[in-house]
Amino acid sequence: MKHAAWWSLILMVAMPGWLEPVAPREAVAASAADLLVGQPIAREIPVTLPAGSPAADGTPFTVPAGKMLIIEFIAAQIQVEAGASPATNLTMHATLGGAVHDYTILVTNQGVFGNDFFVVTQPVRIYAEGGTLVGCTVGKNGILGAAGSAVITVTGRLVNN
Image (tube, rainbow, N blue to C red; front, side, top):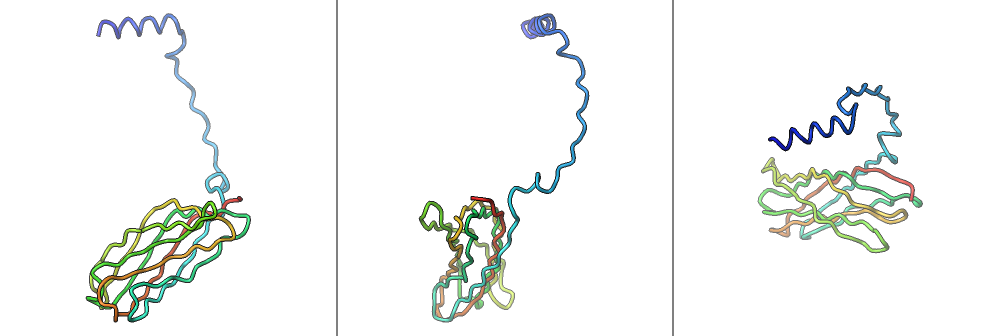
């Protein structure tokens, strides 16, 4: 502790005024443009899992040309016939750098409510180039004869490319 006291004394002598209170700055109101960079976007991707099929693709949407989509959050509700699927999976597809990339998204079983009910609520950071498709595949394990459905909601921002 003796050395700490010496350093404090040296700083006070060498840097007069360093202990003076600093006046608080005025708060500056931020505009919506300051808070959100890019245009907010939300898209739903419906998926129908036909009976006898282990997986199905959702209806993709196109990222506008000249823009980049930054996907920030994915939410989903997936339902399959009760007992038909001990596990369900979701894969998102987006193009970056001219190549399609697949992103496995964590799916959580919520229980049986007439059907087996699965949900997704996951923050992500996925980039998709303008003029390309963003889509998904929902898969199920177990009985192939059971049908199912899903709605995947993608939210994020469109920024200039």
